[in-house]
Length: 432
Image (tube, one colour):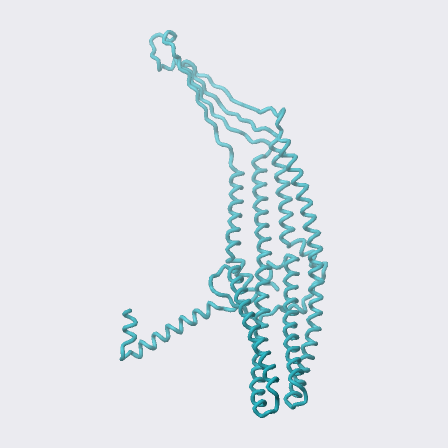
């Protein structure tokens, strides 16, 4: 309130006014900086570092690594004490009391369990394979996250370019409306022609509102995926230069078998099952517990050893071994399924990408022809050699062609993203 009173003073200090103006400009520029337009590569990189789900998922690595520590722990020592006190005084050693060591027998036993058949090493190996499997799970999540971010970004790109197209078309129609108002005043055209032009302008207004709303929703979706609170803008001029991209299908398939994370995931699961099978077989061997005994009996010291060995007549861990074998077989089948799926999906994505490249070339030719038609009809209409219907139809045709071109360019970019996704290369998108 004091600041407001100070500002409202009649004789306001010019230096203070300049200071407040500078601060305001600084704050506005800071806000504008927060509205930085993101390229597709920047959006994917930001999601990789800031997505809230991915951040939470990465803790699974620390959890899995803790199992390595657990697997490497050795069994604790076991200490056992037994004390037997003579209770009948008639049997006490003459001249001694009840607590004299001659009337007591004591047992001290210290033993340790020994894990045979490399159980400790196999536990560590299994824990390490589980860590690798967890990392593979996270990489698969990253692959799907990158695809989702790319698709949302491309949706925003299409909407922004369609919005620019609408604004440009609306500007041209507004110009035509102004011209037709003058022509109507000069009785060159009929009122119906002006109304037809205004109806088309109203349709563009409605389409613009719908497009802005959809763009806003997609912006919120992208902001959530990127793990940020501020609104998100994209660089609509940023397009993927993919028309000249070429890589033989065989090479892409080879890269896919090495890099695709669901294949790596299936392979990691197979290694986990193999490590678990080895461990379960080791558990069929019983652990030995051995140690030493010190046993003073009525003040006479005795010493000895302790050993216990379970006899594996009944329980040899048969159930877990059998289950581990089935799990391993299942993991092998899952790996084969994943590899077959890669071949199918990569082939389809590759053919779709090649088709979209051809479609883009044809769309460019149609766009050029449609633009020429509009220029010709527009000139004829302004000279009075054709009707408003022909001109508006040519205008709509060019608009639809430009919108179709945007869609085809969008489909080309999306087909390239799908090819990177199905080949497992999308996590290395910044290299493209």
